[in-house]
Length: 93
Image (spheres, rainbow, N blue to C red):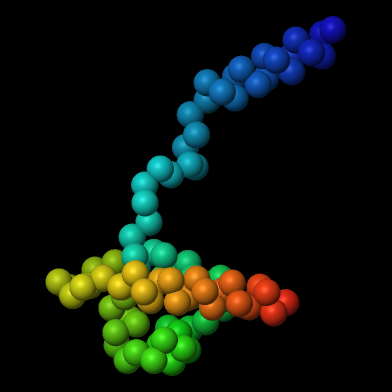
């Protein structure tokens, strides 16, 4: 019986504890692109080739400070997500 009470207290304490490592903010397009490149184990240069865009464009898309340039288009993010999905289906990364 003591174990059930201590387990209940532990769960209650965890519920009250702040979840510092949990972020409820939406990632920026640059953060999404960088995460996908990491997941795919692609360099910015290789990703630019995969998407048939200039390397400089990919660098802008990966940069949080784009200097007034547009952020990565949703289609580029979707294309990288699809590439990741295809690699998983093919038994890759």
